[in-house]
Amino acid sequence: MRPHVLQALPYPVQLVVGLLAYRENMKRLYGQGTGRFSADEIASFRREVWESFDTLLAASRRKSEKDETFWVLGGERPSEADAVVFGFVAAVLVCKAAPESQKVVRALPAVVDYARRIHERYFPDYECWE
Image (cartoon, rainbow, N blue to C red; front, side, top):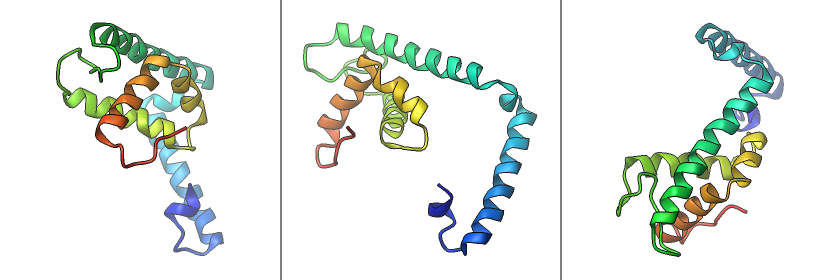
């Protein structure tokens, strides 16, 4: 992702600035405690969070009419929670920078179905992820 953000700079400068930014972010994450988890723990947290959303969305889907858009909190209309969840799901499905998250989300049918239905209802003019 460095070439996109720092494209105005010459390549050697991109490397140095990228390294400095990486080092600073890693120090900050370690200081917050987030950077102290192992890769396996992070993968476990990732799976747990997305599986929780899948369970919640599956329950909402069961309550809704067939082929109708269903909402995170199970209401009749979208809420702020739906905007947030859809934003995260759509970002994971289109972003190539997080292949592990993309793999987890694509394996969860209720999450993908939720995002697809919202996309078809509110954003039909835009290309869908695949």
